[in-house]
Length: 142
Image (cartoon, rainbow, N blue to C red; front, side, top):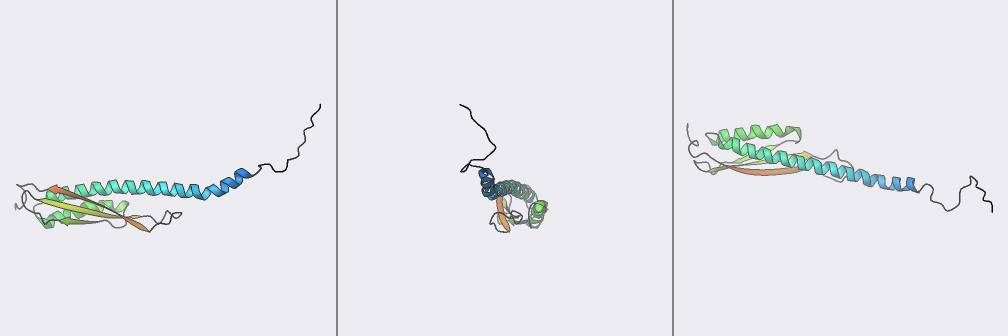
């Protein structure tokens, strides 16, 4: 028996199905990539904000008076301007006394507007607090 091969296509084949699958999956892949960028950005900013809160509380606890403590913490929070829209710090000096504590809370609004495939707000606030003890021999010393 002899088989003749011709260049004709058979009807009902799967020609072009890969193109259709790619067209259907491209938006899903773009949304997944945007979600991964979002997760990475938020994790990175969370680590930076926690570090800034720790440094701000430590810097505040080493000052001699509450006003200087708030100013020292604000200088630390200003270093977050690279990834934050407008970082802010709140310093709780209600426990200001030798052997007391000072708490710094840093809030960082992270910009998300550039991740357009995802339905997100324009910013998301990342917050961290840290409490540091005040040296019992340094506080109140003038």
